[in-house]
Image: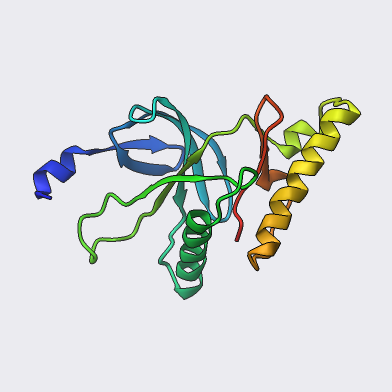
Length: 171
C-alpha cells in the first residue's frame, strides 16, 4: 500500500492524557475506562454501523513482560470464540514500518456497564441468576480451552442492558 494513501486512512485525537491515532472509520471517540493494560474509548464504526470499544494498549513493547502480555491478550481474544467472552472485531497499528511499530489498538464489542455498576442496582433473582449463569458459561469455556483468567473481577465483566454478560481481558 502506498505510504500517502495509508497516512490518509488515520487521524489523531487527544483522549485524556493520551493520543489515539485511529482509522478514519472510527469516529466520536470518548474515554470510557483505563487500567494497567491500556485506555479504552467508545467510538462509532462507520463500516460496521455500530458503536465499538477501542483499547489502546499501554506501551506494549516497553519490555519483554509487556510484549508477552500484549501478545497473549491478542491471541486469546482472536482464538476464544464464545458468546460470554468479549469478541475482537479488529486490531490495527497506525505505524507504517517495523522500526516505528509501537502502538496496538484492539477493537471490541461495546457493552453498557461493568459488573461494579450493575451490582449497585436492585436486580431480581431471575436476572441475578441469568448473569451468574452466563459468567459461569464463559469461565467454563475458558477452562475447557486450558485458559485461566487470572484477573476475574467485577470491572472485567461487562453487561448490556438486555442482561447479556461478557468477560473481558481473558489473560
